Length: 400
Image 1 (cartoon, rainbow, N blue to C red):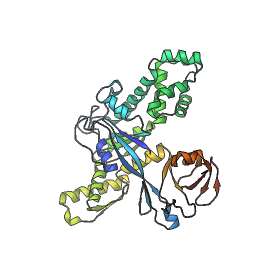
Image 2 (cartoon, rainbow, N blue to C red):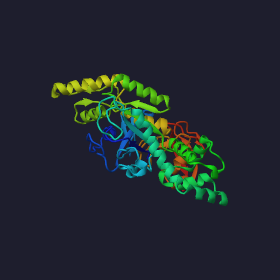
Image 3 (cartoon, one colour):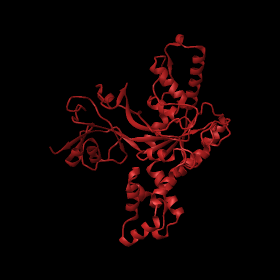
Image 4 (cartoon, rainbow, N blue to C red):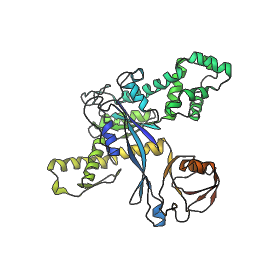
């Protein structure tokens, strides 16, 4: 399953975002280090369900189908707030970084209203530059990677040269616990155009390489939270500067999303995740204050095209991680498993994955005994190197 880390300094709304997107209630308070240990829960990204094409209701096992929208699970990790100096163990730095080892991507929650300082303490709105937070978090994680690679580097460089060991193999071994793949390290080395003579690498070279490894292996999206209370010009300036530096940044109100999901669960409103509107079902049960709050939320949804919470989760999954949804079946004609369940499974796969990759994803035995695949729509025979497309319905045929 895709794993996404929810990161940021204390008191910026990380736990509120986590609770909103997963409906997993965690402790939320207005002071630093409310979150001590990592919380894990499931959120869902949306895709159009293929069952609409055949007119038969699907029977999902680990996903959900909501009126033709397949909700596909991803795991989120809400970790302790990060403060400057975390890579040196300051605050809960060591715990924070350790919790992110297996994350595929990071959602960086930033207080876009500028109302928390670098330590996460409340300050007057607009008095802290959120761009500083964007840069410091990336620096801390890059230094963390740098410290792992650079420990005793001079000695290692001599050994690699003497024993003709590929440097990317040595770095991959050092970073093996961080879910960073050798191919990602090779790509990073190509991008930074680092000196081929590793004996000449400086500390700055290692840091530059570490930044590129971070960018490739754990891409970061910026969630500009508290957009509901931010001054419009302040928010606009931050969004422009962040985008100008190449960041993907989306304005968001985690509090509004959490309020909508709670109201939906209690039956007060009808709201679909990611929607730009909602319907009040029991207006007579609401106080004037509650109606006023819902009106404010409604204006925000229209202005920003939603609360931003679902948009951020899906941009991370589909745009940063380049995932596609693929549906394996055992009967390519009825799109069912052996028990007759229609489209029971869906897997998120990296763009460029093949039919053979899907076979291994379903079960190791299927991959090892792969013969061919069949396209559930065209019934065309597919080889092991067939590149999967988003929404594919695929039957895997293997030796028994």
